[in-house]
Length: 361
Image (cartoon, rainbow, N blue to C red; front, side, top):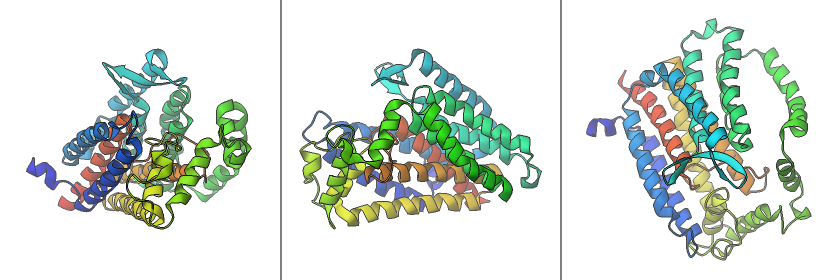
């Protein structure tokens, strides 16, 4: 066990522990005095399991995982198909598989599995020998699980696959002409998505984002209450378990999607800066892993993982602040959820493995 602990990257591990501590305090406060009062203990158990998984993976040579990435990807695809056929339905969405008394969301893990497979395929060839068909193959590998996730439906989770599509081709040396074409096509894709992909309730979220005051007690309630909570925090916050929006239960889904609003109300602007600084340090250390990695596959994985983490953080914090439409994307280390927690730590375990290999070779 001591050998496994030595494989951990000290800086990254301390950042993770700090964010976990902050997230646990926030969940305790968010659930206090409600039926969710025990969520922080359940989440602590998931965090402990995730940390153990990360420690185990940190000492494993990532190349061993890359070699099995096709098999892992195939199992992931089968699990997404099983969700559509026999998945557990909650709130009109079929996103979970029931395992005894527990439910598991395969899509949370699938984005990391997809990244593993794409990084292996593109990283197995020299940078200057990647052909157009290689990139098209990578796009297909990402698009297939995205479509399955959209069928659940879960647009937010499907969007979390996009950093894989964007970052890895860029690292491969995407030509400026191709990049320009992609940028030109973005508005077209947006129009098609609005007309053909987005469901009525998803369009309502965009409309409410643009004008939350149009329905402040209905569909705009979440964003309105979240903004009030953030504003009430002021400079230094109202203090632990002292936020009125949180403790009087005005703030909705305060243990998952809007958990960061709880932190902002209790810790204020300074607390928000601290949390964002730690997230920034996390992303920078992961990017250092991409730079120092011994193989292209490890480098691509670390860069793609950084992109996925960054998207989760930016989208969730932007949503809570009312700067982005309401979209159910978890905030790492803060939001309650077993599937998301385990998948995050497994992904970090691979990054730790790449950093460990960079140190010893």
